Amino acid sequence: MMPIHKTDVVYLAILIALLAVVFGLNWVAGGTITSPQNLAIDLVSPPESPQTWSMQSWVPTRYRVLFYWIVQASYTTFFSSNDARAFYLVFVSWSFIFFACALITFYFYLHELNFTHTLAFVGGLLFLASPPVTLAYKYPVYTREDPLAYFLVLLGLFSVFKRKSTWVCIISTLAALTRETTLIVPLAYLLTANDSWRKRILVCTPPMLAVIGIRGLMGFATYDPFEGSIYNFKTPWQTSAFLFCVFGILWIPFFVELINKRRNHTHIDYPWQVLTSTALIIFILVLGTQLALARAREIRIAFLMFPWVIPLALYWFRENGEHLSVMVHQFSFWTWGIGVFASLSLGILWLQQNNPDLMKFYLTDFKNGYWLALADLHLSATLALVVPLWLNQRKLETQTAR
Image (tube, rainbow, N blue to C red; front, side):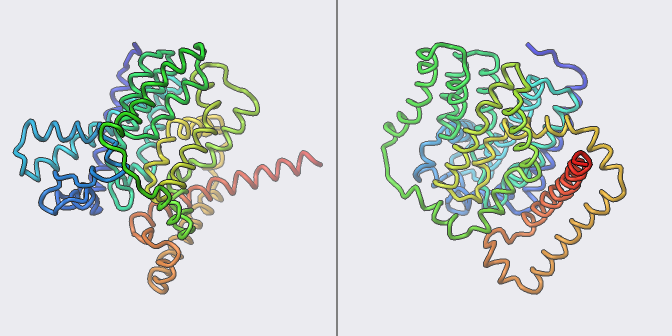
């Protein structure tokens, strides 16, 4: 078992405190967890009875049962069936608990990838700063069972790293009853394990049977799976904006480092082999599934890639730390960065005041102050980081050519 140091305790305490701040922000922002009535809207229930959880009868959400079972079992065991506030508190409590479990597990997951205590802490900050977490309960994200899915995906990948095939099977089966897209864990095992193909197939069979079996038990029902993709096609600017907001500033470091790893084979240890060899197919499958079968603005779905994206981006930041340190100590960097942020902010404010219909036409539901502010921060940070690095690279190439 991995030893826990005092530094770990301090860092984890700070991360959990910041998670509480995130929940506070979502409460203030007027999201799902602001009140029992708000929660009822998200769960498509009568305003005074969020515990009805009518959305659970919809397809395909009806088959995502594990979080629903946990919340309902806790509520019905300890509270009256008509106590809406108690149900609200149970729902929010389990949501916080599973988010905290995911955050703690991610911290040690990064340790397993040979990041230091401090960098594992930074990884936790990047997790919390990711838009699907920062505004997890703000429309239109609709976070429900997702924190449990994040937690189980991390546990599953941890088991893959440790070559614990039995635990991969058990955890993946539970995850499959939470969200279908968590099948990326047994897929990662299938593609990277050193076990025989017979054993790999045996390990991956129960999660697949769980996905199929729960549909058989609860009754197969049809629906239009491409309603989301049609909406994405009709709102390309909103789709692009929300896809950027899945990871924001982390997208470019992730792709750059992934290309470097696949080209140079810089990692020989097994956990990194798992991530680098599966990252591209996971990216294609998860993002493709969201674009084809769901609305892009529900960015919690694509965020399931975070165990791949954040570590690779974090590795890039670590490898370029010396150069980045020099860059951020330059006055020109801050002049450029602040200028970009000010320009984007003023542009957004001007459009909101003078041409709100244009913003509504292009961004529709994205026209929301909290989302605009978060997107502004991530886009400004991305431009502030990428443009100086690109110019410096061009300068080096020119000097080399001479």
